[in-house]
Image 1 (tube, rainbow, N blue to C red):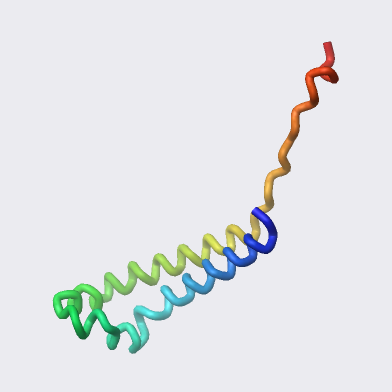
Image 2 (image 1 turned 45 degrees about the vertical axis):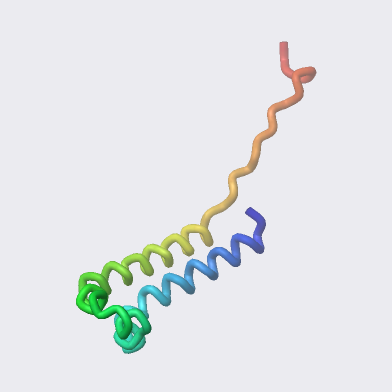
Length: 87
């Protein structure tokens, strides 16, 4: 993976994780489109367990972003050509 693509992936994962961590506990979560038009979803989406699961996915995204940030690419070892192999 190139450095720019890796940096963009880390930023995207971190931002998604931060949003998933924060949004379930904000007032925006309680006043969204789905809860006003699909009333059967209201008890499930406002339940603290569901909010905790969504926040947990956000924490996992943040951990994956830090894991990608700290990981190093493994060097590719190229085998020697057959003419240089010791006999």
